[in-house]
Structures are given as structure tokens and as C-alpha cells.
Image (cartoon, rainbow over the protein chains, first blue to last red):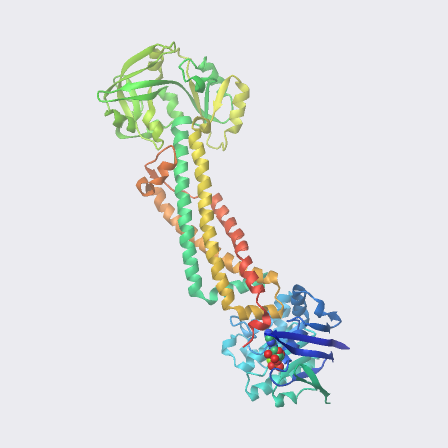
Length: 228
Length: 410
Ligand SMILES: Nc1ncnc2c1ncn2[C@@H]1O[C@H](COP(=O)(O)OP(=O)(O)O)[C@@H](O)[C@H]1O
Ligand SMILES: [Mg+2]
């Protein structure tokens, strides 16, 4: 079953007289449970594509279906609600609210969704155990390493039970050891919970860990490889 | 809702120094406003109390044309019978009958126009506590005298240059329109907040003035009624009396002193406008601070938007932050106000420090004893909640204008 379907997607930016085709006629689909990496050099359109799939930006043309819903036709408010209930995000830089503890950050989206306090608590403690950060539950983000912060962000994105998780260069600011650990965590969740992951990177060691790799260049797909 | 309240509280705590200064400046504004309101209330209360206590009581009965003609001939006949019949109504604490004649008073030094009030001290002191307004050393209210007594206000005594036991000549019109003139000796000197009254009202014994002006014992101009303490409004008794005695004029203090009634409404309105303007100015300040806050936390707001926090939740978060700032400030201001008032309500504010107040009104007071009404606190609280709501709109729009992907870029 396809969880994401993208058809002839375009995103153009006009800079001065020049039109930049950040995403240029892209079509592909993603099945439930995939572990998909989007790679490509800087400026190839990875971020733009991920923002479009996540409903954070509006396409210039083309169609995006998430679980059958045509998100390219949705209005701002609908999209906001859709993101809350369907899509998990792990951002590159700015993920956690500095004033909340690790545990409260994980609970944030569940609380926005209106999930009961008891259930939030149980799910958060389980996830903290899975990602190996139980003892840091009450720490503020500033007291956590970059890698730990990203793992908390992954836990938060998965806690709310999204259809898939989008992560734009989640390892970009991490050292290689932390990056590997984060990937371990993502892979574990992909295998144990069946969560669909779509993430981008330009780190070759990270790419290798994906089951499927889409390679972008100048906003176009130049490769779509699945290795088992 | 709990989440947004929680986030609002956490956000207030994160920059304690700023929250402190914001609250401190709001407290200054609200406390100033509340004190101004309290002083205004005190002034109005004292003025009205003074009018009711010493001049009009709760209800007055006159002959129908008494106020039109201001002639001695507009008097109530058979006052004994009238008093008996009025007394049959429930809720009446005391009543007294009075003769009221415009007159002229002359001392060795000076003279003045006055209103001569003829009283029966036994019943009068049950309705009007003039005896309480006579300080020690200033004589008494017809309890101890040797010669024909008169009681007058301190202002008038000063003007006439007289003191206890001074000799005066009082003249006025008789029932038939002739003139009478007679000698009186000052028996007591009173002082009240209602300075117009203090300046023009003199009291003599009913029997004396009746003889001088030719009235029979049961002919008077006015019956003044004091109601039982537990009666909140005199409206009921007024309408009862009106239907029982259709030929008579039944009045309350606003009918007798409309200028004070107007002053009261005018001051109340002014006070509400004053506090509204202060709160409005505070709101403008808060809007500015919240816009700054949104700018500082634009990445956070961008992230929250990206994660799916909708505009209602954003609005709530900002609104609760503002409401808490204002309610905490209101609470502190109220505490300060009560502390200051508990001091001032004993000592009063000398009028020289609030000079303008006397110019507003038609009465004057020496000292103002400020009070705050709980209705006004409720009004302020309501206004604060309304303004918090309105003040949240612009900052929320600023947040909604943040593009999440732009906000979170490097
Ligand atoms: N907001 C924008 N305005 C103008 N041009 C943009 C904007 N965002 C991205 N671009 C352009 O789109 C292209 C793709 O950018 P991006 O998706 O960020 O690539 P990547 O994430 O692979 O580095 C680049 O040429 C970039 O300059
Ligand atoms: Mg990028």
C-alpha cells in the first residue's frame, strides 16, 4: 500500500529574473514501512522536496497524496491539522522547546492531539527506554548532547503515531558516532514499530544504511535504488 | 487548554527579569488608577452621605407646591395626623416634622441669607444626627441653653464672626407674608462635609419659630423620614406614600439636590473612563512586548507551527501569557490598594492634596476617606480579560505570518 504518492511535482523559486526549479517534475511513491533516504549535493532540492511532502510548503504544480489525501489542495489551516495528526518531523537544527524537559518535549505533540495524560506518560516512558535515554527524562535540551537531542526529537515525532516521519538531514550537526547511534534508533523503530522513515543526507556512510535511496540533482530524480 | 496554560506559565517564568519589570509597571498603573477611583468614590460617598444624614434623610414629604413657590404658605396641614398615617407603613425608623422658612441673619459684624429650620429636638435627633456634628467646645443641639437658642454651621459662624452665646437677629416671612424679627443666642455650632448646607442652614426650636411666623402646632413644611437600616432602597416606600397621599410631594435626596446626583453619576463615569484609559495604555504596552517576544521566539513558534499547533492554540498561549501578567498585577495592585486604603480610611486624604476634586462637585469636603467598591474590581477584572483577548490578536497574527521553514533555517 502506498502511503505517499507524488505526481509531476514542481516547486519554482524566482530569483531576480531567474526561475530556479528547486523541484523539477518529480514523481515517485512510498510504501508503508519503508526506510528511504533522499541524497544529493547541496542545493539539489532535498529540503524543498521534504517540505512539500510534509505539507510545510505549497507546490507550484503537481500532486501529493498522503494516505489518499490530496494535500496539495489543502488550505493552510487544514494542513496544520493534517501535519499534527499524520506526519512526524525531525528537523536539522531546531527541534526541541528549550524550556521543556526531554520528557515534556516528547509529550508535546500528543498533548496537542489531546491524548490523555496517563497515556502520554506511558508512551513517553516506553519510548525513552527504547531510545536509551530514560535517565535523561527530566533534563532540559541544553543539558543534552546534539545526538541525544535528535534522538529525543525522533521519539517525539514517533510518539504521536504518524503515518510517516520526515527528517531533513537529521545527522548534519552530529559527529559520526552520534550519527550512527541516531540511525540505529531510527532503524530500530522502523523494524520494531513499522514506522515509515524518509530522511535526507549527504553523508555517504549514512546513505548506506537505507533500504531505498533516491538521488536528486538539480531538482530531478536521477536514481531510485532499492537494495535488500 | 491545559497545555497552552502550562506553556504560558512556563514562558512567563523563562525571562523572570522581564516579567518582573512588566508586572511592576502594570502594578504602578493599576494601583494609581485604583487609588484615583477610591478617592473619587470616597468623595462621592461622603457628599451623598452628608446630604442624606444632615439634609434630606431617606424620604421627605412636602406640600405639592413647596418647591415651586418657596413661600411659607406652602405648608402641610394636620401634620399630627399625617405623621400617624405615614407611621403605619413598614420600615420606618423615625420621623420628624419641620418648619422651613427663608430668612436673614444679622450679627454685630455681618449678615447672611439663611434657611431657618424649626425643629423638635426630641424627634429631630432621631432622624438627623446634627448633635453628632457638633464638636466639643462648640455647644450643643438644644440640650442645654438659657436664652432663645439657635444652632448654625461653622462656616456661617465664621462669616458672621460669632461664637457660642453670641447674640444674633433673625428675620423672615410669616405665614401671612408679613415680616418677623427676633433675637437668638448661639447654642451650638456644627460642621459637616456638605459645605453648602453648613453655610446656609440654621436650626431653631419649632415652637419658637411657629409663634414668630404664625403657624399652628400642626402646621409644618416638611416631614423627614429615616428608614430602617436593613432597607436597601427607598423606592418601595416612596411609591407607597405617593399612592396614599396623592396631593403631597414625596422626594428623595436626588430630587432635593439634583446637582449632587449629577456630580455622583459624572464622577462615577469619569472614574470608569480613567481606569479604562489606564488599562488601554497598559494593553498597548503589552502588545508591544508580546510582538518583541514573538520575534525573539520566532524559531520556536515556527517549529510549533510546523509540528501542527493551530492558530487557536497559538492565540490561547499568547492570551494566557497576557492574562496572567495582568491578573498577577491586578492582584498585587489590589493588595497594595487595600493596605493603603486601610491607612487612609482612618486618616483620610487632606483635600489640598487632591485640590481638583472640590472643583468638580457642588459640595466640598475637608478630607476624603477613599473606598474601593467590589463592583469596580469586577469591572476592572472583566476589562482586563477583554483587553487580554484583544491584545492577543496582533501578536497571534505575527506568529501566523511566520513561515515555519524560513524560521527554522540556519
Ligand atoms: N525560499 C527560497 N527562495 C529562493 N530559492 C530557494 C528557496 N529555498 C530553496 N531555494 C533554492 O532551491 C534550490 C534547492 O534548495 P534546497 O531544497 O534547500 O536544497 P538542498 O536541501 O538539497 O540543499 C537551491 O538552488 C536553493 O537556492
Ligand atoms: Mg537542505
